Length: 431
Image 1 (cartoon, rainbow, N blue to C red):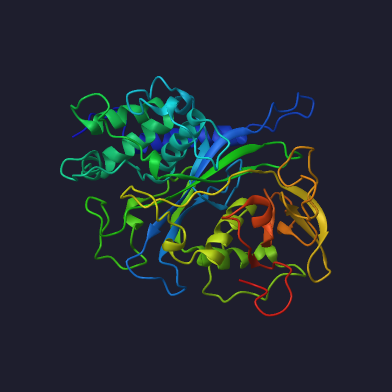
Image 2: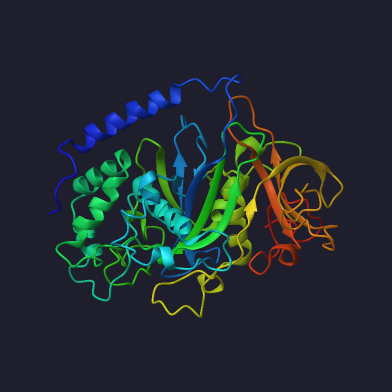
C-alpha cells in the first residue's frame, strides 16, 4: 500500500475543502477602482472520450466526460464542463519534471500549434492533473506489461487512499509528482509512472471576451481512453453501455456535484432543452424524459462538432500514428476570442451571438487570423447564438451554433457543422 499523503481522513479533507471554497466564493467582487487584469489566466481542459463496446442508440460509439459545476462556483455555476482548471506552478516547473521528460525542452511542438514545447507540455500536465483532482481519473502512460504496472498499482488502492491522494494534490500540486513516484516503485530514474501527455492532442484554444471581468486563456486537449477490453484499464467489461467507465470517475462534491458520461448528441439535446432557453426562438417544451443541462459556448461548440461530424472514433483518430494508444488527428489551433454582437441569421432574424474568427461579422486586429486581404468572408459563419443571462446567472445561455466555410480560413479539421437553433432554413436546420 502506498504511503498516505496526510493523516487526515477523507471526510476531514472534504470538510476543510468545503469551508475553503465557501470562503473563496463569499469574497466580494473586485472593485471597479482597482487596476484592470493583466490578462486572461492560462488554463487547460480535457475533452475525454471513452469508447463504448457497442454503439449507443444515437450512433455514437463513445461518450464524453462532463462534470457539473457546483451552484456556488465563481465561474460556470451549475454548468456542465470538461475537467480542467488554471495552470499550477508545478506544471511549469521543468526541473521538477526533468526525470519524467528528459527531452521535453528539445522536442518540437506539432506544426498545428503555435505553442513552444515547454508550454505545451505544461498545459498537458495541467489538463491531466486537473482531471485527476476533479474526477479521480488518473491518466498514466500505458506500459507493455500490465502486471505490477503503475496503473495496476493505482487500480489496486482502496477508495479511501485514492481520495486522500486526490485531496492532497488538490491542496498542493507538488503532491502529484509524489504520487507518480510512489506508483513507480523502486525503479531506475526515468522509469517512473508518467502522465499520459502523449495521448493528448491540442484541439482548441478559447479566450474569454475582453469585456468580461474574469478572463481565461483555455487550451482544450482531446484524448481517448483505452477500450473497455484493454488489459489493466480497470474497466468492468461486463457492465452495460450506460455503466461503462462510470466506476472510474466521481465528482469531488465541492467544486463539482456530478460526473456524467454522455454522447455528444445526448449532451447537445439536453442543453437545448434547458429552461433558460424559453424565448421567442426556443424550441417547443422538450419531452419530460430529457434532463436539461447547461452548456456555455465553448463546451457547446466542442460537443456540437463531435455530434455533427464525428459519430465514430474512427473519424477522429490519426491512422498514421505509430503508438498503440488511440491518438486524435491534430488540426490547426488558433486563439478563438468571441465578440458579442447583434447579427442577422440565415433567415433574416436579428439575434445576439458570440462571433468567432472567420465569421463575416468578426472585427479583426491587423494581424489576426482570417484578416488577410483576399479572404472573402461573405456568408461565412463561425458563431454561437445566445440569450443574455437572467439576473444572478453567470454566462450566456446557448440557443445554437453554426460553422460554415471555415476550412478555407482555419484549415482541415474545421469542417461545417451546426446544432440547436442555428438560424438555418429548411430541412436539416437543426442537428
